Amino acid sequence: NLIVTKLLPPNDLHFALSARLSAAFRCVSTGSLTITEPLNFWAGQRKPGQKGHKEHVYEPATGRILCHLEPCGAAEVNQAVEAAKKAFINWSKLSGMERGRVMIEAAHLIEGKREEIAEMEVVNNGKSITEARLDVDSARLCIEYYAGLASTLAGQHVQLPGGSFAYTCREPLGVCAGIGAWNYPFQIAAWKSAPALACGNSMVFKPSPVTPVTAAMLAEIYAKAGAPEGLFNVVQGGQETGSLLCQHPDVAKVSFTGSVPTGRKIMEMASKGVKPVTLELGGKSPLLIFKDSDLENAVKGALMANFLSQGQVCSNGTRVFVQRDIFPEFVSEVVKRTQAIEIGDPLLESTRMGALVSRSHLHKVLGFVEQAKKEGATVLCGGEPFVPSHPKLRGGFYMTPCVLGDCRDEMTCVKEEIFGPVMSVLSFETEEEVLRRANDTTMGLAAGVFTRDVRRAHRVVEQLKAGSCFINNYNITPVEVPFGGFKTSGIGRENGQVTLEYYTQLKTVYVEMGDVESLF
Ligand SMILES: NC(=O)C1=CN([C@@H]2O[C@H](COP(=O)(O)OP(=O)(O)OC[C@H]3O[C@@H](n4cnc5c(N)ncnc54)[C@H](O)[C@@H]3O)[C@@H](O)[C@H]2O)C=CC1
Ligand SMILES: C[N+](C)(C)CCCC(=O)O
Image (cartoon, rainbow, N blue to C red):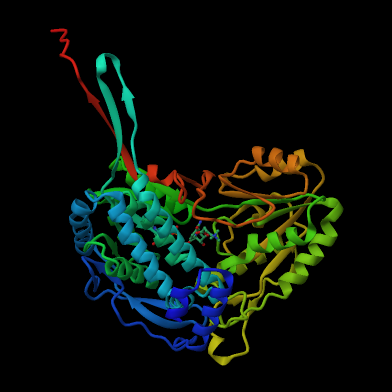
C-alpha cells in the first residue's frame, strides 16, 4: 500500500485502490481494539496526565470502553505550555520556507498513515471509514496548503516625506491554544495547527474528552516530520483543562470549535487577557431549494447537508426550505434515499452511517425527535434507535436518519441545533418569503441555494446572512476557501489565505531618514 501511495498521483483511482488494499490488510476490526498508550503529548513525547484521575473513552460502534483518558491539571498544562514556549523561540525565527518543509514532511507522513489514522477516527468517533478517510485527506491538504503559504507571509513598504519610510511585517503571536470538538477530531486539530505553525506559532491543543485519540497521532507525526520538541502538544481533559489553557498567561490566542454557549465562555476568559479568539460555533443553517433546481442534485445536496458524520456537523443545512410546486416530489425522493442509507459497522466499506458519538448524545438527539412530534411535526422516516444485527454492535449508539415533515418555523426542531441526523423540511412560495424565514435565526454559519437561474442564485446568496454559502452544492470545504460564521456562529475564519491574519500580529516600523524635528 505504501508503494502504491508513493507512485501514483492522488486521484480517485489511486484512493479507491489503496482503500481496497488497506481494507484487505486491515488489522483493526470493530470491537477489537484497546488503546493503552498515554494520550497526552508534550515536549516530544506521550505523557501521563494527573495521577489518580481516569475517565472512560468509548467506542461508539459497540459501546465498549476503548481506553482511558488521564486529564491534565494545572501542573501538566503548565508543562505543555512551557514546552510550547521553548519551541516557539527557534520555530518563529525560521523562514517560511523552512517551516513549510517540516509541514510538507508531516503531510507526507499523514498520506502514508491515511488508513491507520482513519481507522482510529472511526473507532473513537463512530463515523464511517469512507468519511474518515476524507477527513484525513482534508487534514493533510490543509497542512500542505499552509506549508506553501508559509513563505508568502510578507508586509508592506510605505514611502513617506523626506525619504523616510515605514514597513509592516506579520509576526507570530506565540503559544496558541486549540480546543476541539468531537465531530472531526483529526481534521479540527489540523485545521487549527496548520495555519498556526505556518505563521511561526507553537500550539497546545486540547481535543474533546470524548475523542482524544487521533490528536496524539498528529502530535507524533509533527515530531517525526522534524518539528522541534514542544511545537505541537496535546493536553487531554474537559472544561477544567480547557479553561486552564484559556486563562494561562503564556497563551496568546485561543482557537475554538464547539457549541455557542462554550464559545461565549471561551471569549469571556480570553477577554481577561485581551487575547484574540477564533470561534467556530454552531449553526441552524438553511438550504433553499427553488422549483427550477436540478432535482437530482438538490436531493443529493440535502442529504449531504444533513447526514455526514451522523448529522453531527456544525455547518449542516438542517432547515430545508422547498418551493411548494416541487415539495411532494422532493420530499418523497429525499425520504426514499434516506431510508436506503446503510447503517451499521462503521469500519465496513458498505456502511454509509455509523454510530453517534455517545449514548448521552444519542438520547439528546432522539429527545429532539420526540419533542418535534409533540409540537406537531410528522416523522416521514427514521428517528428511532437502531440495533444492528451483529451481536458485537448491539451496545452501539445508532439511530435511523430522520426526515421531519409538517414543520413550522417556531418549532424546536427548526430553531435549535440538534447535531444529529434529523432534517426538517419546510415549504415556501416566494423568494422574498424564504429569505426572511431563512435569515430569522441568531446563527449564521452556512446556507445553501439550489436553482438553475444564475441571477437568482447570486441575488439570494447576497441576502443570506451566513458566512459560508453554497450554490448548487453543500458542505464542500476546500482548504483554500475560508470557512466560518456570521452572528453567534463565530468570529474569524479557518482555512484560506485570510487565516494567516488570525495567527499573526501586525508590526509597523517607522524609519527616519532625516533629522528629528523636535518641538521641545
Ligand atoms: N458547532 C460545532 O462544531 C459543534 C457543536 N457542538 C454542540 O455542542 C453540544 C455539546 O457538545 P460538547 O462536546 O459538550 O461541546 P462543547 O462546546 O461544550 O465542547 C467543545 C470543546 O470545548 C471544551 N470545553 C467545554 N467547556 C469548556 C470551558 N469552559 N473552557 C474551555 N474549554 C471547554 C470541551 O472539552 C471540548 O473540547 C453538541 O450536542 C452540539 O450541539 C458540539 C461540538 C461541535
Ligand atoms: C468538512 N465538513 C464541511 C463536513 C465539516 C467541517 C466543519 C465541522 O468541523 O463541522
